[in-house]
Length: 167
Image (cartoon, rainbow, N blue to C red; front, side, top):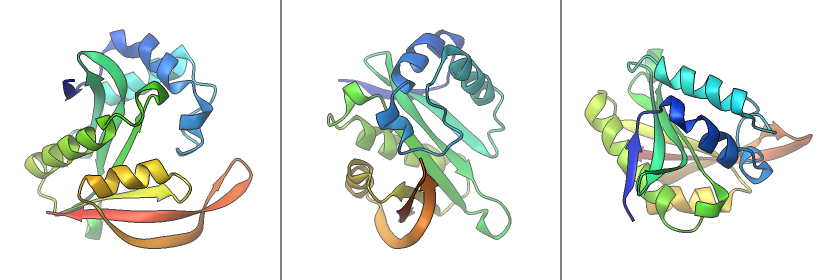
């Protein structure tokens, strides 16, 4: 199984829409990630990624043996947090529990360290997303703390867990 990160292309529109149209993914992501997720949403997202300023955002498609399986990216922070980047990712449900996300997170961290002058990569995870917590721990992230009731999603409050990896 060859796991690679690559730039997004327009041929990813239909596979992205198919993978992303899943409440089990949307329920753990920010509200900007729509559900249902349609081809127009995929096209908009891909266009944003293609136009991203690489001084701020590094968005990638996650592939396994050449097939799209998910999305991952880093967003460089500003001002006094300019040496930090936020990590975000998701994997299509049919690819869960195969080690793909862990390898993708390790790869994006290396890209971030090499591309930007940063010393910290962090992720904020819904506390009920135990699989994502495990991915981060397996990728060398440390839990920094719990932000109580910091997330309001689908009419409910959730704690979030802050993880980071220091170079």
